[in-house]
Image (cartoon, rainbow, N blue to C red):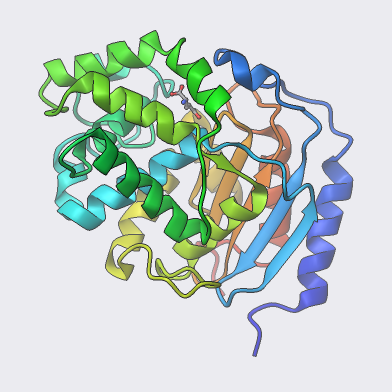
Length: 313
Ligand code: GLN
């Protein structure tokens, strides 16, 4: 028996798409020059159920850069390789109360007591992926993302070049984390691999598949590949719930109950464990850095389908 009725899911996606396609709030990120050039009208919604049914609405083929959504999967890789304590004891799992690229957040606790969804914790997570050299680490990270997406993803080179030329702040963050002993490898290499991982191109379907893999105990519900160990899924979702939407994570959890992660490329993924993964791409962002349409569409669709894991079933 199917987890959801086809007509109900289709109606929820259509309603959200129609309600928000005309919404003109927010603005593309522009601190990475290439992101300002992305068509703000791109709007795609994909929901993949934990039993592998794929529902789409709008633009599901245009690729945007994954940006901060990558942080979830690199952190998951570190947890898979090194255990749940590795992240807990190094960068921590708490909210910082600061912006994702905050230097103050590092200074508050000398590089500790943050999480892998903000840049210092994320660059540190990238530095913790095991490998003999740059290429080996990079191909492990990309291969891991591919297992979640169920296809071969590639880097959007223009985005990578644009961010690599303008990421002095992240370079400073990497070096500061090194100075505090939270990065033990070459910090410039870690920041560069992090920049590359943020530039991976994804469409709404890729992102929804990645979210659905988390919703399905770490196993891609379409390819059947076990991407992440099932036992490590709760820790990954917990960090997403705590800090996935930056400083609006509390507000988001209050409204939806869903572990989620946004990126400045305009994507958001959200996970209803055992039920579905959903992703929306729409580049214009609000003041907190989260896609305006994506937040509204995901909240409406999840609430229509009973997706809130904190609600009694
Ligand atoms: N690559 C971006 C950065 O480091 C990712 C930020 C984001 O999506 N919030 O600034």
